[in-house]
Image (cartoon, rainbow, N blue to C red; front, side):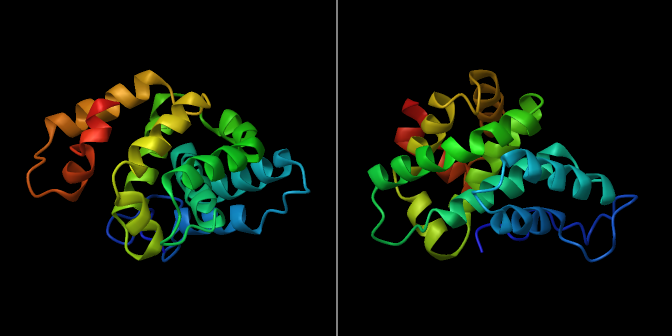
Length: 183
């Protein structure tokens, strides 16, 4: 699982959330269960309903949806960077309108970058493939090129990484990869 614990709220309970529910994992499951032949608006309604029932955020929805995309791409150890970019572009043809509906600002766009980062730092095949240079940068650039993530969100995310302690921090290692810095 490339980020199943990303939304785990066991440590800090948020008012209105059901105890023991991993909101991001549940949102991801809703996205994985979505039939691509069904209008994306139907999924947006489902996500919104679950979001309200659990007092979740649009950032939680974005994170769950993006982790579902990565899982549905069928990433294997042999997946090349070109395959990653092509696969993401194909997925965004279907999922792009959903992100337009649930990304209301920079915070949601940054949560998408953070979801990519979390997946790249996760265990398993997805983490292994996305952490290899320059995979992370290529997917980040694709999200930007496809107008899913704006320059302001990328700059804000980068500023947060630069302000933090990058030495020995896995997020720092990913951020400091030369291809990511070049972008």
